[in-house]
Structure formats: C-alpha cells, structure tokens
Length: 365
Image (cartoon, rainbow, N blue to C red; front, side):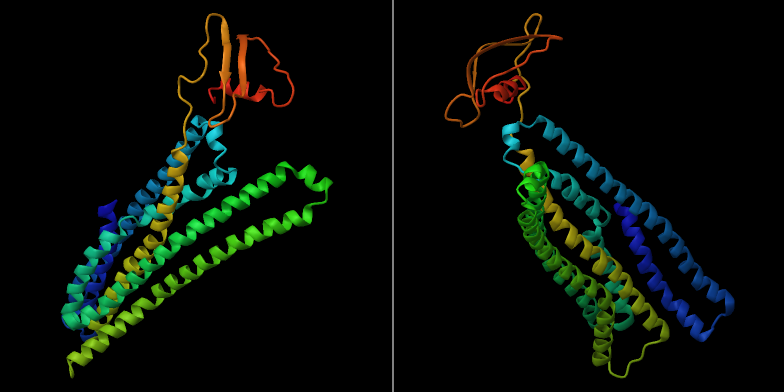
C-alpha cells in the first residue's frame, strides 16, 4: 500500500513535469504532430497509471481501516464479557458505548492517509528539484516554503483537535449516561412531572458538547481554507522571488503551467493528505488512551467460578464472600447445591445478599 500510495501521487508530479515540454510544443509547433505525440503520450500513460495506483492503493488502505475498526469492536466486546461487574461500575454506559460508536471510527478515518508524512517528504524533495530547474533554487525554496508552512500550521491545529476531541468525548459520555438514566426511570419522570428539568439538564450537557464540536469545526474550516489558498500563495511566492532575484528573466508558457501544476500536485498530498493526517492522528491517540483505560479493568479469573462437584452444577459449602474494599462480607456461611436441570429460588429480605450470591456463582466475588 505504501508503494502504491507513493506511485499515486508520484504520477501527479510526473504529469506536472511532463506538462512543460508538451505546452512548449503547443506554443511553438516545432517538430510537427510526431513531436507532439511523443510529448503527449507520457502524459496519458501517467494518467492511466495514476488511475490504477490511486484506486488499488486506497482500496488497500481503506480495507485496513475497516479491519481495524471491526477488530477493535470485537476486542472491546470480548473484554466487556470478561470484565467484573464491580469494575464496570467504574465506567459509565455512555463511555463504553462511545468507545465502539466513536473511537473505533477514528482508525477508519486515519488509515487512508497513513503514508502521507513520509511520502510527502519524498515528493517534496523531488518537486523542489523540478521547480528549481524552472525558476531557480531560491524561488523554489520560497514556493515550497509556503507549502511547508501550511503543514506546520496544520500540525499545530492537530494538537488543538486532540484537546477538543478529548473534551467532546467527555461531554458525549455524560450525555449518553444521562439519557440512559432518564429512559430507565421514565415512569418516575412522568409521574412527578420532571420532564422540563430533565430536558434542561440534557440541553446543558448538549450545549457544552456542541460548543466543543463548533470549535473543532472552526479549526477544520481554517485547515480547509489553507488547502484552497496554498497553491495561489505558493505560486505568488515563487514568482515574486524569481522576478526579484533574476530581473529581466522571462518564463515560457510551459514553464508557468508546469510550475503551477507541480505546486498544485504538492498541495494534494501536503495540504490535503497531511492536513487530514494531522486531524485524524491526534483523535486516534485520544481513542487509544480511552480504550487503554477500559482494557486495563480487572477481568474475571478463569478459576474464579465455583467448580461443579459430582452431580452438582453449583456447590457452595459455608461460603463467605465480599465485594472489593467493602467493610463487611456480602453474605456469610452460605451453603448451596444446585443440580443440573434443577430450578432454585433464592429468597430473602432486601440487603441479605441474594444478588451477591448470584454474582459469586458467576465468579464476580
């Protein structure tokens, strides 16, 4: 995928470089149609090569993103089934739901642009040499410098995205938890006419979430604006430096077209690809830290469940169990024997340890 990615954008650079002799032939007509065909054929071949490299390369990268998202979803689900209920009580329902619905999606967004940082450096070096052959090294440095400056600004915005993503995730967790609690107790809400206060509470959390999303979208707008204006600014910087350092020099139509095409091709990978990578990579880092927090929860040991003895599917003899860090045991000296196919009813007053007994049978205590 990395080779196809490099060839995808490399063919755009090659097309921009081959445009110079082709446009010069159109201007002068020297050599006749044969010379024009010899200059135009490589352009067509580069376009066809770009077509296949682009689609096959992005298919491989996007498939990697899909597989990463699905694999993480399965991993989180398996972890959820192995985690103690006492540990899950430390996490909100919204937190766990957000891991699957939002955080896993971040990897799907990142993978298509995974190769942008190193491929941009290689193509920038090649393009700098090609531009220098047209307008000189100083003018080439000025034009490429504008592109690199835009990347620096986008990298700074990437750290802003990282902070905003963490805040948005926190507000989303709170909103999902509150709505879940309201839905579970909807009868009490309707009975006591608490609709208005509950709606106000949801609206306040939603407003905080929307504010962070708005800030993130403003940063995204700045990044998009840089993408559209980078070519014009880089071309202006290159031309201004060229005519200042080489007074009286002239450029042919082919030189102008090739220079603009080279800078525009660089914009495709630097101002767009790197910009997307700068936004998606910090979000993935935040998602990894949130997943790591969930994956570090204590699991139920394989030998924690009472082993069946003889014909009994569940056997407890004078068992005493307690929740972690609880001041007193949940129940003491419990004796129970359940055979396969037998139905047993556990009854008793509130707080006597009925639920704790069942949790102990599942290995939670």
